[in-house]
Image (cartoon, rainbow over all chains, first blue to last red; front, side, top):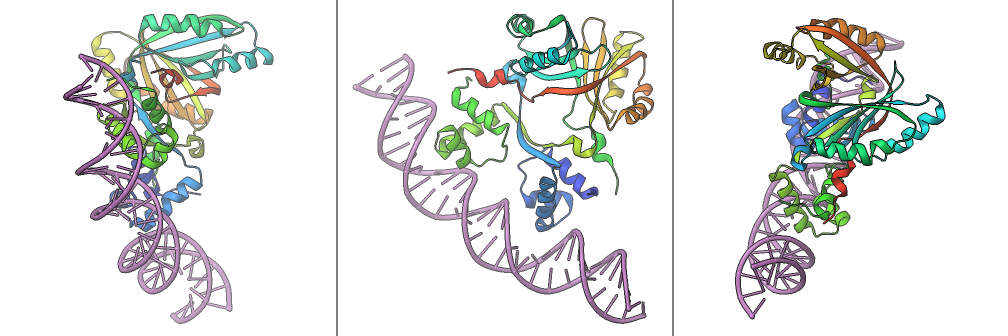
Length: 158
Length: 158
DNA sequence: TCAAGATGCGCGTCGGTGTGCCCAAGGAGA
DNA sequence: TCTCCTTGGGCACACCGACGCGCATCTTGA
């Protein structure tokens, strides 16, 4: 299924106002509410829209510190990877975890209240992860870009 | 303002179903729709909820490759940082960009269709960034954790 | 004990949503 | 060239549900 410019406009608008009504969206996109409803349902059914979710202001919860953690395992055996991954999903402060190519290690993104809080997280969450050989942390001083969707998605023609 | 357990339950639910109605939410949380509506509005007014947004399935758009790019500048002068940051926000394939401590460089998260597509992005977007001394890319082989909100937010008592 | 904040119930209004039907445009085939 | 068929759009309508309000009740804390 191919998306035209109006589909992309609908998606772009929904990534901002997920609760917009059919009429509201129809006006912005330039369609009738009927046509819009059909297209929106098709986008949901075809899996382009995964979910509608509320975006929380994490700073409001005191989570102002982002830390990138690079982790190397003692062994790259399948069993070691499985053991590590089974535990890392349980860490409540970890929001992202990638298995990386190259040096064959993991990169985590951790959210903390401050540096002291990260020390606690390091002690109670990260240091308990199995098969870890080395942990290296870098603090994010500032966030320049934070997009859920790359703008390239909305830029296609048709 | 302090959040109690029911507020957290509301937030947890809304991060999953942003379009849930008051009645629907009220049943899940254990409140009347009136009380729930009041609390939800308070959460919005107090800034805990930033927005309601549709989550797109980026794989459906062919964006299956995540790349972590580490960039070092020629100079850490304020002017060099400003120049770099002004350009990096324009890169359509960049979804995250952090200014990092330590080696004083940037880390970007880039989404691409595949490795060939990343080569194009590297050529047309990244290599045109100003004041760059070194670019180092690592490919994510797999994503183990991907959460918008750390589970620690919802775990507090009260 | 009193007051203030929060809850629950009931109600009425408003708006969204979904359906059926018709129309316009474009493509295929005779 | 004409016609049929398909695809997508718009209009109108009706139903159902959400939403917000007022008021009584309950709880919490001073």
